[in-house]
Length: 353
Image 1 (cartoon, rainbow, N blue to C red):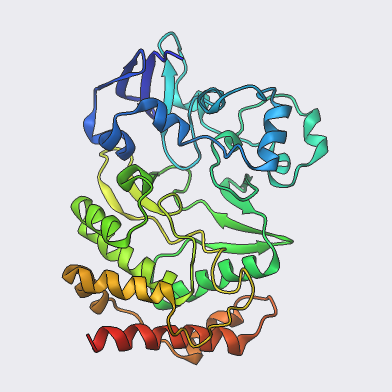
Image 2 (tube, one colour):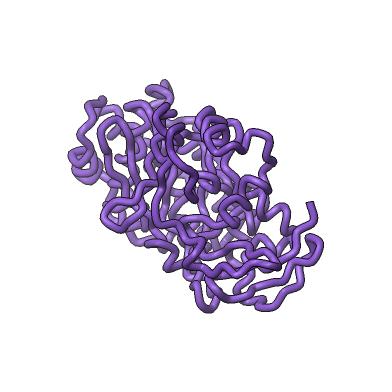
């Protein structure tokens, strides 16, 4: 497909697209992915709903997009998302940002749990076509604010909620989560794209190596690098097996493109006891702890960032207070000991090396 038009941020031209080639007009506002890869088609594809989700296929069927490829799917909503101001304007289009900005979502139930009645809806622009990730989810507009709803079992929902509360207790930036019936919901931390959220994959590709991510973030912003260490510390304490470059990212100023910092810590549902209670409660020979300690030992600045992290003492009271805020019954003693043992292993290895 030959694309011709303009990459926009709100109503500002960021680049002209001629036969898929990128001609930059406003370099400071260019998405980080395009700064690093200059692949406009790849950038569009990165915004497409995961085709492997069951409800993604149902959604496409309802919208008559079953034969559409990722680019066609994304362009159905002009490449727009909830969490940034970027979109694609065709060369012959008279649309402006207010025309394409999402103001409702008539297909939230279909995307979340395959609601059959949604097949009766007339077509309207839906943010689900650019709602990425492997879990069934949807955006809901509630009292003027967007919330991301996600499916999960009780242990996954507990892990997400508890880590949110623990991170807040430690003083780290965390996305806000709440339980809503049998689902979990998270408040849009861009507040309707008042800031732009960009995935770390636009900076480091698919490389999950801690040192690679830290080094590249440091080149962009030392504050991002420091916040990355805090995020990975929480991941290690809480046994987050699934941190990757498409579930964390940075926030940028919509008007200047300045990197403001790391986005609040989110997507912790494959952590702690989400896959059952781990047998290694003592956390000895824990591979995540080994990776974290190795990361700090290999980069003196990363170690300095960790040593200078300011957070309260991690003890049973702090963990217990966080547990009190999550109304899901689990083995509290296990959670306390699991996290305390991780903290002891980390601090012990750092101070003895």
